[in-house]
Image 1: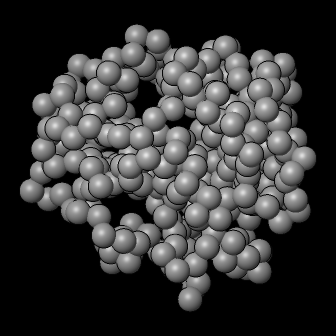
Image 2: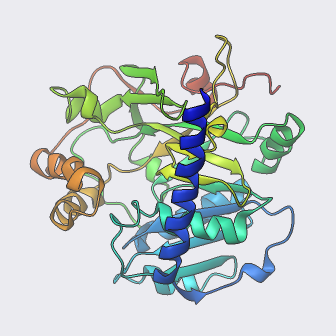
Image 3: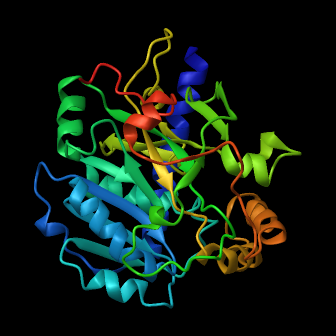
Length: 336
């Protein structure tokens, strides 16, 4: 990258830090347990709205994985999400009624909290329907991964978003609080992924999977991005600039081997397509608080109904991370 481009990126990073500083005033603390955070703790950051039914399994999953503290922004929920979070001793929760879209889709709020509380910690940033899977996750806690990353002087860890879905009508099985969503949404597309480098930020841009196949078949370049960098050893100077798709400084985005080899990587199992999503798609399409005026959600609302079946004859049933490694969707790199 040339000197001029490097200079522009430094100013862009300052711009995103300034946005976070300004929009910190939109956050009101509901319960702040951050004093309990200690030096080696692994932290999880998330923004959510009306996700009460998902929370018990989400919190339990990440506690078992090794997350020590959750820092969550509630965006004006009215279903008990905020109240439930405030009851948890390992959760700090802030609330806001401000626009999700105008906050950079929650990026500004989380950038501020990460700057204030995440420095020198490994920080995992995920949505409430995203579940982190990495090599050896069935036998090694998240701390083992972060210790190896520290020893290898690696500051960020990539994960592809893997959309999961049920076989048969999407509303055929009702999701119940506390249930593992992948007992229902247990299928995924093993192929049809497009990968290309993004010259602006130096990250890989990944599209495809069931959403490209089912909802964006006639316009694949508009399909949602599946590349994520959810796990970062944070410093006060870092910022996300596009959800968890890209960070600054640019070097954090190079979570792949540029010489043709393989770096360790994971996936985020995406439990979007449960029966809960049918009504949510219509609601979010009307609110227009998501990317491109919620064009993606408008597409879902138009084409997704309770009888929709996302399964096809090429669908694969999820087993474990080793299966994903065989399929080339995850890599253990040189972490043995």
